[in-house]
Image (tube, rainbow, N blue to C red):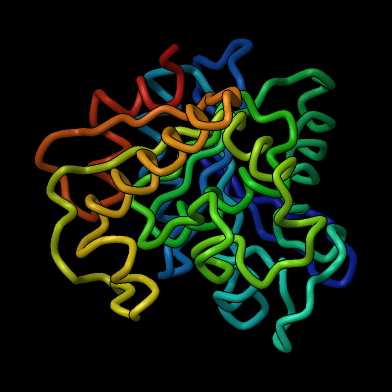
Length: 263
């Protein structure tokens, strides 16, 4: 019970997991928390204690350190290697998430333990792209204040869109599954300043002038495509008023419960 730390066996790349189990825990789900660009997984575990206590969940925050998991492997999930070549799914960083789930299910003796995933900033980028390529059986994937989005079109290069990816990673069936993913875009309406490693590249600015605008635009583009194609659309957009680019405040806001567990 309480805070802890365990190592996830992951071949040559073991992953440190910072954990929290409420003293009053009974049978709630697992919540995986993905840190931002500061790689401060322990702090993110602490930020999520409010969620653990409010909702009776087990929190696990994996550490994706910068040396082994630079932006190509973290924010963009390792879909492409450094030469721009598509990698097999087994090499994607996304594949660590189901390993974490299996490990915690084993430790808890609950093979059917449901799980949710939330990430902020760089962690939100990671989860937006995870939703496209390897959503697994997460009940809900919550991307909070990402700095850029994976728009459901092939006109923007990966990782802003599906351009330059091979057909098996960018065809209409991939886009259809992406729009059907259980993804929540969770936005602070105060996240409108170019701080905290803001992506001011031309490709980033094409998506919007700030993170709030990009989140709204990404959601609208996905919703529009689903309507045009007659595809299922399971994304949600939840906004919390006044909060900027601050994970602790985003997690503590009452709207976090809606982002994770709302219908």
